[in-house]
Structures are given as structure tokens and as C-alpha cells.
Length: 359
Image 1 (cartoon, rainbow, N blue to C red):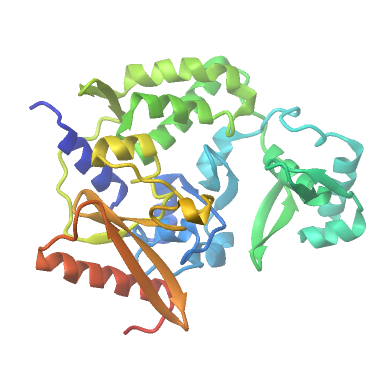
Image 2: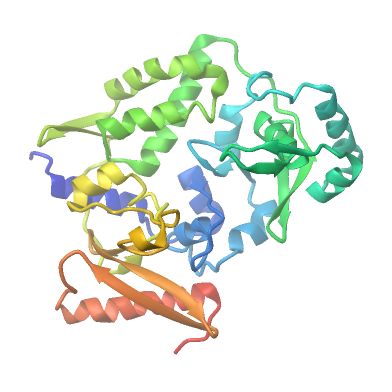
């Protein structure tokens, strides 16, 4: 039977929104969960995990981090990776970030080793490094900048957070493979992690995701074009309306649930805006950094999923200890009475997730 766009849409929803499990199992199944500091009404990692983890509460990942065998690190974006994924990314080349092999970095690393685990404030009190220009063109504390660089390099790891601030300890990765067949297999495995999270993928996004692996494996950046070719050769593939689609061979025939779900803008179901528009035929935009007068959906509009269709968006806020919600729709609100019931059930789940009293 020919694969249709409806089948791909059902696959995109069903394979990502798997039956809720434990936090550890969900993290291992994904391999990577993107993080974002905006809290509206909770951080992206918590909003992603609440759909996939039984009885998940906002902040559980941070509270249980030390027992989960996961790591904060860069994959195709910054987030949380399993130990298996991190092992395939490291060690990164010594020259990935300027300055991490210099005298300041060596002194800082020795200080961290002596202390065991350090708060950036402790490092700043010991070393006065001034300020530097950051990625966004602004000014950052130079100590924080150096800690970030050493963390990316793999010389440090985040052992926990304290009031949202990363606490670092020294770390050393095992030597990486030198055999081309082994490190190419590692690249392919990392590509498959990303593909599994975000598939089915239009060809344009497949290329974008694999090239984004330069953040995970800068030491193998020159190998990513050949990794893309290998991915296209091994993945299941179809062409619909002039667009090439790729996935890992799962059947595209999956039944949607009756649930209404409010998804973070970073949720795997809606993360790729190209795929979003192809599957749901409207353009969703993340507007947190859009000037207020130019916003059409809202500061942190949450895509509203019903069955296997994203039919609109919601904006949630907490005022006087109560959850407030506003909704917009691509066309009009569904008239099906089950939709209203399921939307109310979703808002009740969010209240429990945030630790708010029920209405």
C-alpha cells in the first residue's frame, strides 16, 4: 500500500509520543532531550518529558539528574544526552575551542580537581578573568565563558544544578577511535539518534540535522557530508508531492490517540518548522524573541495537538497561583464535545505537573 502524507503524520505523532514510562527509560529511549531556560509555564525539557514520563512533575529531571546517568552536553542543540550518546561524541578535538589548552584553563582545571565540584562563583572569586564578548554579541563573565568552553571540550562535566546554576567537576573521556570504520559507525549511530527523535524527516531537514552534528563531533566535521549520503542509502524513503521523506523503517501506519496535548515549541513533534508546515499546512513560529507588536501567536505559544493534527495553539501563565489559558485556532475550535473534555483534562494534567491546586 502506498505511503501517504496522512500515514507520515500519524507516524510523526505516534512514534514520538510513546506510552509514558519511567524518567530513566524515557531518557534512554530518546538519547537526547533539548533544553531551554525559558519557563513559560515550565522549561522546555520538562514540557517535553511530561508527555512521556508517568506522573512527571516540573523540575524532576534536575532533581533526579545525579541518579539518571545522563549528561548536559551539546548534541544537535544543547540538552541532556544519555551516557551512550555522550561516549560516541567524545573526546572532542583539543582545538575545538580556543583557549581551553592555555595556562588559565590548566590552572582552573587543577582548581576544580582539588575542590571536587565547584560553583562558578567560587571560580570567579579565585580567578579574575574580566569580561568577554559572547555568542550573541553581548558581554559575559570571562570565567563563565571559560567554564562553558571547558565543559564543551569535555574537560568538565555538570554534576548537578544549584538554583539553576551548573555545578562542575573535572572529567576525562576515554581515547576516541582512530579507525575510520569505527568513527564513521559512531557518526551513523549519532545520526540515527537524531533521526529517530525527529523522523519522518523531509530531505531538507535530514541534511540540516546531520550537518548540525558538527556541534556533537567537531573532530569529524569533514565526515558529515558522507554521513548524509550513507543515511539516505540506509533509511526508508518515499516521495510525496515532490518532497523526499526519510525514516528509520518503522511502519507509517499508526493510530492516533484521543488526547489533547499542549506541546512546547521544542517538542520533537513540532520542532522542525519545515516538517510542521508540510504535515499540518500552516506556519508555526516561535515568537519569544519577536517584538511584542509583531507577535501573532504569543510569547510562548504551545502548539495544540488533537489526534494527529496540530489545530491551534495555547498561551499559559500562572497568576495568583492559578493557571490561566488562552487559545487560538487555525480555523475554528472543534465542535466535537470530546475535544472540550480532553482539553480540560490536559489543563488538569498541566496543573498537576506544575504543582498547582486543581480547580
